[in-house]
Length: 329
Image (cartoon, rainbow, N blue to C red; front, side):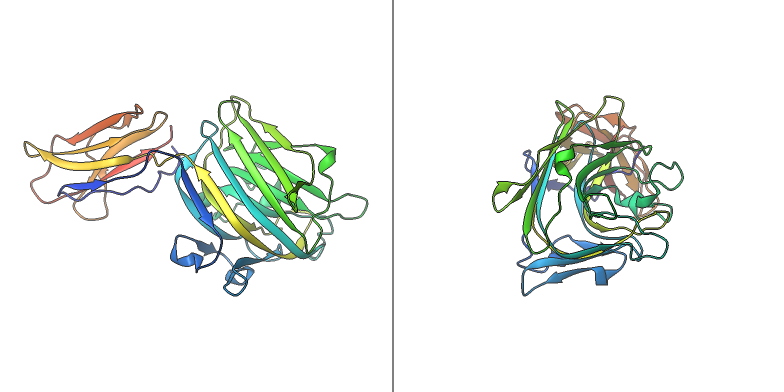
């Protein structure tokens, strides 16, 4: 199993939560402090700073530093079976390769979706490439690689699976610079029915390079929980980067959360949780005497896409707390 989604639980008294059944959209224009509405920083806070005057995010991609993320939880776990989309504006002020000793080649400035639980592990090395021990897993990401030596600059997208398998786009039309001082809008759209990720880049309202496309095989699996502006360490890489720029006007659209229209009630002294479930999710009613030491109060049940009811048929005599655990199979 992968990490469960963070969902609202219920006390032993009745509780009702209403969540819209439509897709969830997160929009951030940095007009107000992003840290007051869900955003956080992992790693070096000096690399990722809210500019309240210019109302954007000032970013330093410095691969000589540790992995650092300006991130927002999605409230769900995305897989190849989910539709999702994201877009953002990106403006570089400068970028340089080879700033780390003995790492003369290029390295990426990155923005996209990841599993924060894995990306914060000490053995997560974005530059390790294909490596079952150190290589990255569970990424859907936009990357820009500045030019170096005889190699051209590259605008790219990548998907990395749960077991470190990589999918790229190799369109030669995307060997273009992202000129410092110009604002580019990046739009990424994943369609579950066709299992395709498309990425477009525009500049001043005009498409800047060919649309990129990645087709996801049926046996390819990824699990994504978080949007992130990512400054990766060049540990175990042969390239490095120091870049400065801004990110603004972020929009993220994901499916509705896995638990919706939740109610908790007593029926004949039995506590029962009812909610609208999703197919391709597994649900467990958990119980605890305090907010730790959770145990199963009802066996794990597959979601149906309709109303699901889970009851504690053998409650303890003392007061208990309940929550719903939702996981992807």
